Amino acid sequence: MSTAPKTFEEWWAGSHYRSFVKREGVPLYEDSYLENLATLPLSDWERRGGKAAYTRLGDQEVVNLQVIEIPPKGELKPDRHMYEAVMYVMSGTGATTIWQEGEPKRTIEWGEGALLAIPLNAWHQEFNSSADKPCRIFFGTNMSQVINLYHNLDFVFNNPFVFKERYSYASDGEYREKAKHWTKRLFETNFIADIKKFSLDTWEERGARTSIMRLYMGNSGSQIHILEVGEGTYVTAHRHGAGAHVIQIDGSGYELLFMPGGEANPEQRRKVPIQPYGVVAPRMNEFHQHFNTSKGRFRQLAFKGWDQRLSTTTSRGDYDPVGAARSDNPHGFSFKLRYDKEDPAIKKEYYRELEKNGVTLRLEPLDQGPG
Ligand SMILES: [Fe+2]
Image 1 (tube, protein in one colour):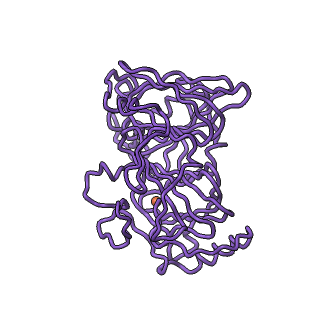
Image 2: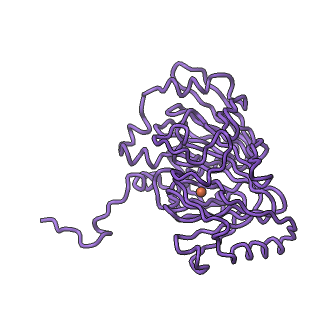
Image 3: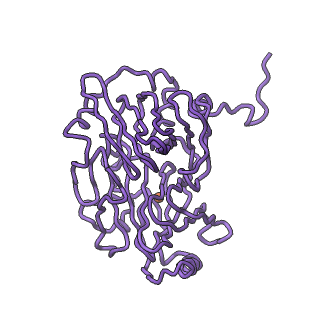
């Protein structure tokens, strides 16, 4: 006779995504913050070769990262899957070959800073072209959501369905930066050779403090953006649904993370350093705030679990083709702590940090910071 579970732990089976990661035999990292994806410990990965780890950040399973290291001269085994994946290169040089039935193979060479979309369910295989240096990459994916939805790994990883419209988009010209600048601040592409050099669009109405480009990649439903925060300024605190991942690309500073209540109580605010390849992925409703303390550039790459262009709601959210301020939009899904409502201690602390770094420029922070 079976006995009913007495505690939550006895009853809870965990998600299919968790079971999948366990089966992969590599680490799963949780929290709202990881200090550095470039040095994150990884384990040998039998399924594809190399080393790997997965994330489950922000206590959600909509968006996750798959961090991979390929040894010198090494390659991963080919893979295809029913989830979206966009690859970023943190270090090293190599290439990805992409193919699917009825289409020619394409090989895209990459180095640090490259961002590459893998068309849905297309085959892809990664190679390290260096004889002496490993390369480290990560994929931003919605794998966790898809595995939980179907909970059948054969369906997810061994599915013969060919998405012609996904790949044909990719084969429309070469896999290079030739792409479409739809409107200001929205760019459609499959490949950017170096996002550190990629030109962003400014928000004139906000001065030269910040610039952004939202990316529509691989004909997918995931939104990605690159954000730059000017020297001597920071983005006001905001919160929204869980799933967004912000990865530091260039420059350094710190982040504040706090649940509602922390805006008035400094003891509830968590302050973490942010430097290249650190990640912040806030939990549902967790406020987050980005502070640039470097001399010069502070650039971040963000993966979100939703796309406003393909959104199922009519909320304009933070996309506004005419560039009007969104502060008065009552239907936006995010909430921001206006600068004039902010605890004055936040700005004081920031100025102290700038002084320590010898940064003399002082710009007023944004009322309505993105990302
Ligand atoms: Fe955010």
